[in-house]
Image 1: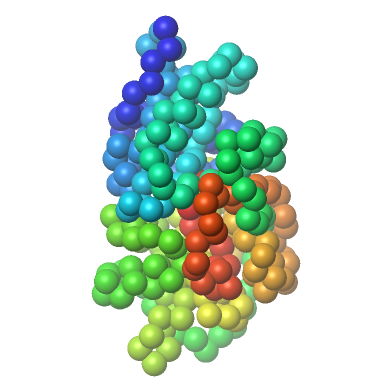
Image 2 (image 1 turned 180 degrees about the horizontal axis):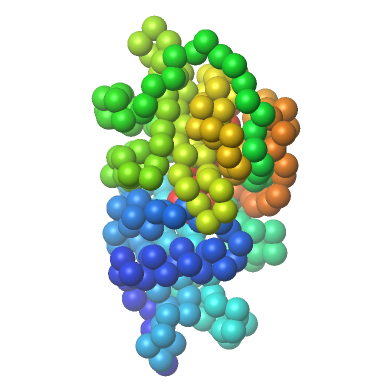
Length: 274
């Protein structure tokens, strides 16, 4: 018997293990922040009581949603369980504009479900070359949260304060902002992952600021960043820092591409939640 239910916190942690099995390299504490984004937005498929499939459908306000963590365990694929979970999560979104980052072998299926390609995210990995800067970089936790949340809204199509507070505040996460004349001109968050560390988001007014943020957070260690390929300066910066492309997926939407400051996004926050 196959049943679909709202996932528990333990289920969401299990989904992270499955994501690691898929070589997606999730952050060590992703599950903690993910669950806060939309507690009712994670679904588990159980076969005879055993979890075998997952999907997330995080609703951001009334107009936007993000689909991720769509996984069916390899032994149960091709049996129709995934499409049942898919239909359930799409019902959960209602009439919202839904986004996802689709792996290459699933993009044709997503198009059949009404998703349209917008651009690609290219994961770049490696130890970035160090840079020198006279920019003022400070711990993002020292910035008034309403100022940080307002800055995030320039680059993300809906408020996500509960998620953002955890993304910045979790003990193992480290975040920096670039400040000039009292105004934020850059923001980035590093989190430990199964292999090295992940940095995302990276927002910046210029590639110089983005480079300073990456250098300040990498600390000479291997990192991974998911770079939108429509931001040519971001792609060139990753190459200039010596990072190597390792993975690609497509950002797709059911509706219009949101009107955000795409030129300032040097790396997305996470491929699972946007």
